[in-house]
Length: 404
Image 1 (cartoon, helix red, strand yellow):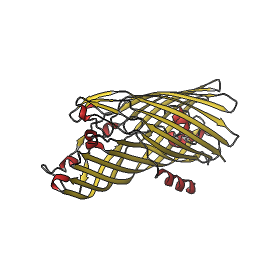
Image 2: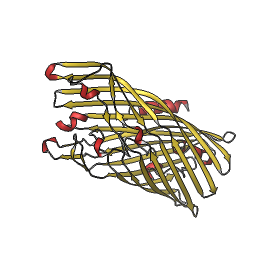
Image 3: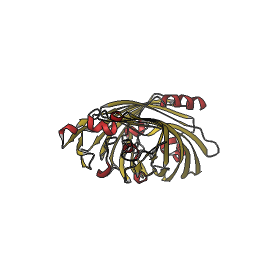
Image 4: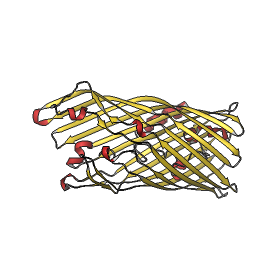
């Protein structure tokens, strides 16, 4: 287990991940979750239960389980058309690689132990045109989670689980206001939280589950360089910002028909209302008319809690092939009044499919695809007076599971 943890850490620290769901949250972390559009809480038959619902580890086959997944993510270019043509622009299309790992132990006196390495959130947006890049020439946030977990089977019908969230964050912000006022900031942090889960099996073919992942305050600290070219002003020193990785509550139910078809309905609420301001702090205080005050003033966000509704189906063909599909409706948390170029978010519809193939009693392969279709959005808030359109994401995930 220690070797797996070490390797997973080195791999993840080289990865970059973007925002895919509401805000900068990324629900899909494995083949099963991608194939089922994140509707993966009540019925979690793999080692990835250690992340999605640790209480369900109690119901897994009593062996050591391991799973490794790799996801290729493509973000389409976002077209921004302003009422003033010179302020229009296109965000760069981007490609990313996201690996994840999961492990579950055999049972020990009704206890089972699990571990996961995931990327539960992230953000990446780059603009090259003068107006958008004056706010977000580059805005990236990498969030990695190391999550040991434990389950306890209270009885044959009820199990509980819990875990500790160790979260590493790496951030970079660049702004370039018409080559006169620039900002270059980098920082990182380690922070902690917890997660809880419970599953009730009122009958053999039904699961009722609830999970909760706590809020984690990401206190990113590092260094910044600010420049104002006309007056040869410069600042180089410490800087920091605190943003929330929000709490998430999920409630789900699954039912298996004829021992082959499993249908799951999942509702999750993301508590984005904790994100009230984006406030960068520097070792110096910049007061107007100092041009650097633009980078020091708190930026209101006032995000709102969001709801997502997900439905997924799994069909076991009983010939070593398992088919999966999902659909989700996902709200965005950003009001028109505070929407920015660093994350021009909008409501989305998610469509997904996947398949698993059982190689033998110990090994299994899987592949899944998800399409995240973002709505076009028109905003007029002073900084932005135009329409964002063509935003979308494509995920392709490959996975391998092994049982000891």
